[in-house]
Image (tube, rainbow, N blue to C red; front, top):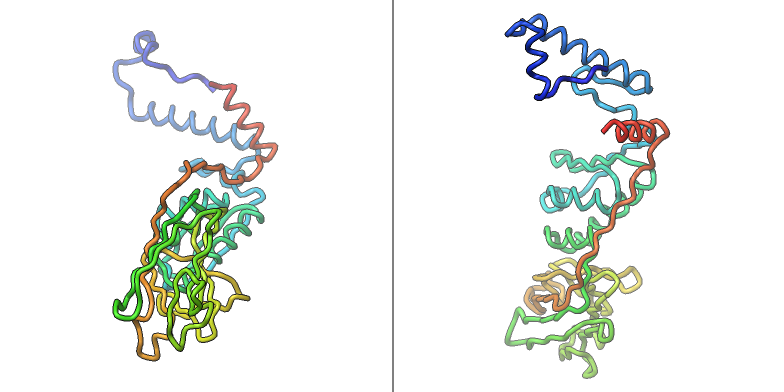
Length: 291
């Protein structure tokens, strides 16, 4: 394909042609250039879109697509441009939000779709006990946090007292219960000896809450799962109740204030991407040699 004249060639070219191009001549040159490009791409086994010259065949090789439904309650907080980018960076899958249908369209390799599905399921599970953009952001990407100051502010000042503890790798537990050896000791008939546990997971850079009680512990109005079923992510501003709010006492608990005191510098990792096919590798090499 002939090299298009650059600005330095303008003088000689103009001398060989009329002062003005006719519309027919210009259209003919554009058509010829496009035909030449299309022919080059077809010879490489690529599908050419007549308007955008899309490399759809190349891009779709080895790719799969999947629709993943999500709960309506988290659509507003999940489906943001930032979270879309995070999900792609963490899993390698291409992501498209479809809020009106409460679903996520995923595209990528089988392994990338597996990662994305698992991560979305984790977000959905933890958001059963309260949803928010900050919480979802933390679930999508782990934070490099070394210690957290956990402050518990009573919702009812006449029944409970404030408490706080610095949580880190060495002191990673804060216990609440009736016994005096708890970090927060509460004398009430409904409260168990060891009612609940706040724990810092340094590997995940987050604080979790585990229910140890007989009568239940409630996070943002919803009962936590039993200890055997696992722990739930605790977020700044969450309401931790020690009694069932349906019984009428909706303020027997604490507002959780979490302050990240020491945060390591975040190291961004490249998400695992699809391997190039032989045709793509050949094309990439030829394009590089052309510059």
